[in-house]
Length: 239
Ligand SMILES: *Cc1c(COP(=O)(O)O)cnc(C)c1O
View (spheres, rainbow, N blue to C red):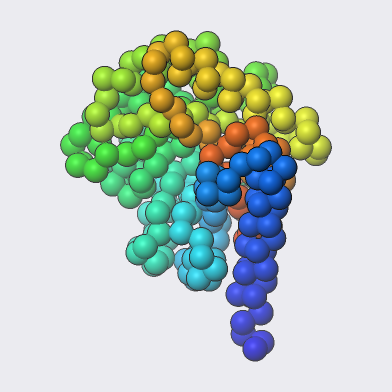
């Protein structure tokens, strides 16, 4: 029993997350099947990924290319990997060949690069456009008023499939304070869909401390790290 303690703890945390998801869905009249859980395994080793995978989680997220490429070969082969971190153009090739979805495309140039590399590499890749709906407080993502032009342009792409929008608002102790940002992303998605005549089904928003609010505002992907894996040890010099 003793050696299973860690796995039991992880399985309890996954259960708690699933229960929180179910309650948020119930409150907002949504089917739980419309919300995907991404277990964000950054800074945790492959053996912990195995444990969480055994709890029935199949989608994992990584935010650092180097770390992910080292870890993934030691993880279960059935896992569907999503890239959620800042992506430099010289890292697009390994990301496209390893991940099925990139949540964090934050410029037209990067999207064009993903399209070109995905054409080269073969597999199509799903992409979310990261939008800075919070303004000043967060630096990553395109400005909301740039989204329409990028979506318009992406209609010509066959290999990078733009499926939705992603946002990462600055941390607020009270999740209610980020609700307006999640609502804004959804409203922007609705507007752009209408104006461009395209379908953008996915909204990637919500993390450990605020995913209920994100679900209530329409999230289809929540990116959950610490609520499953526990606190990350922050290295003295991050990368
Ligand atoms: C680390 C990370 C998460 C998960 O954060 P938690 O607060 O641990 O749930 C989600 N999204 C992105 C982009 C991240 O880098």
